[in-house]
Length: 483
Image 1 (spheres, helix red, strand yellow):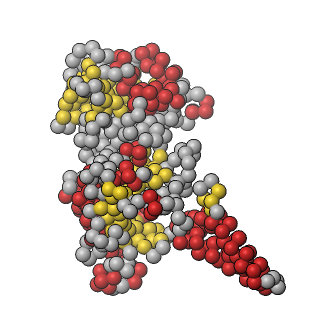
Image 2: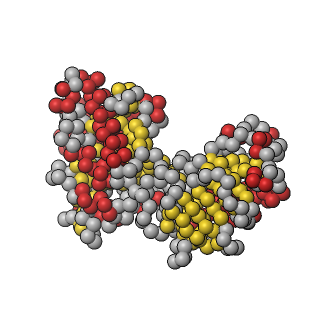
Image 3: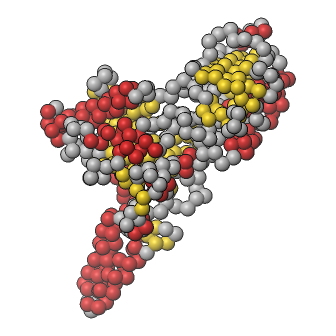
């Protein structure tokens, strides 16, 4: 009996199907162990009843779960991991030029496409209005007439508070509260093909392993083209990059509740504070619909993953109800008129320059939250006394430091290029920035009231104390500062 929830169109598996039945591999291992025990007992001259008892005891014992996993399941998992570790990386010629990396494992081929975040946007964190991964568009690749994908996986890496220094992390966690949004997110789409499903396409290209690689590259390029037509920049990964990407869920990953998936709720994937991984899988269900599953990595303190059917099923149109952000929301800047938190990315890929004409306290707050959300900040300033309390409080020269200060012995090798954000404080007032070559995202911090002298991806200004006006490409808002 399957259970539909609300009107999303997705259906969660019934309780019976969701039960943690042993997998096929574990059952085969248990049967092999039972047969070996029974035959061994018989070979030693034991009576038939003793051989049968030995077989039943060993088989049942192999499937008996202790702390959620049986011996047979443990061995099957290890064998599966070893098999995946034997995957091979090959280079396939890209239809657009260059090489595409392809991973070959278990008779299937997988290519990867990285989604490039757009310029910074204002994100109302309590709503679902920011751009999302078009799951419906990706699922259409499962039914392509010439080279259908066997499965599509959206691989996510990030965290709510990915910064390392403890003091900024703890304070930002308190500010976030229960909001399930990652501040930083890296999105990769993996496209897996089964050569048996693409036999005609492979035959037209000469057959054999080389033609299979070309078909995998075509499937990856088709994904890139579909995303670009949807307004999303994407690039296929090369062989070296593919070698560093693991498409499989890590050991002990937690599956998402299928009833939550059926409601269109994937918030649990983004609940982790520390950097982690998550994934969403799309597969054809054999009836014209799709099977949707999701998982996330754990921090080691959570219960091991439950076994059984954890996928929701339904028509492709139902995927429109799932909101998987295309990029991280960035750091909280303030609250809107309704009191909801508003954020924007001020560092990382896609953010080149930020102009902030604000008072000293908001300037320090911006830097503190950047460190909490994963930035490594180097401050170039003519007034180090203004920044010194924040630097000392953070207590991590590798993540927040003032240019020109002497590094502690254990960090003596740090260079300006090791930082991802360079803050040029007071440059419009005559500070010579030549003491350091800016690296990564460049912030220009000025006193409130100074107008920008250069173009910037994000412009921050203070119309009055306690308020912050934020301008990005095509959007602007005035927010109330929140401590």
